[in-house]
Image (cartoon, rainbow, N blue to C red; front, side, top):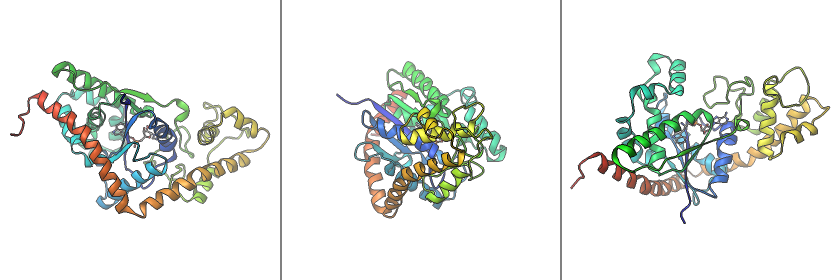
Length: 334
Ligand code: TYM
């Protein structure tokens, strides 16, 4: 029996992933790849919607792929590839854009947020059609589940609407994907501003724990994390967002329950707790960082792995695209 399909991806928008990407996505991906036939892409075409230096974008793309592997995504088990290596993504996005309503695209909150943040002269049409390209990513692989953070939920819902519309207009073509949204405790917040999501594009670096940071730098950032004046290590997201965020990180990385961590630090100050967390973070990311840097030391081998995986991805994607082209009436090349 063939295993159900899973699709997810990340933008190569920084030199390093941040630990929100690791806890909110990579840890789940690593487990799910055992049960699902999984496709994980580095979505470099999506990253073009922001200004990039070309050489840096290439480097970030390799670095993102290396971090997937270092975090436990196995390219022999899952298909781990670079989006632009499979041409069908851009091609299906075009066809889907012709069945997407302008008003429908205009309702996407991430577009509204980003365009407000970037200002009118930085807002490009690609940013507007970003969710349509994401729909193409998902639908090309006849995906059953899409594990993402809740910031991506609306995009997966649009994907479902487009799949349903296409299927009802042209006959069964796409499998209907289900979003799998991480629960609240899988969302990681900025250490300096613990009510804002930790993000690769945060304005200040002090609140972001990068997977490839030197462990001493990560430890320092944890020691300086914003807490509160109560001095009690206790989960209370509403009133103690800083400490609660640190507890969530601690629990996610150790597999422990929050109450057991609260017990361990009962009667001890935040200094001790932060030291404990710094140790957990350094232990977790030390080996991941070392493995990623080792992979990046041999870019030719990494490129070879990515190329082989892109071939596997293209086989699936091209079959879906051929079906779509035939259904919408594009003349087959003789
Ligand atoms: P991106 O690159 O913004 O984020 C990648 C994944 O990491 C999750 N994430 C977080 N989870 C917990 N805490 C955080 N602080 C945190 N920050 C980020 C995100 O929810 C996401 O799951 N549009 C997508 C990329 C994409 C995609 C796709 C995803 C393109 N095509 C197809 C799934 C399927 C994005 O920008 O992810």
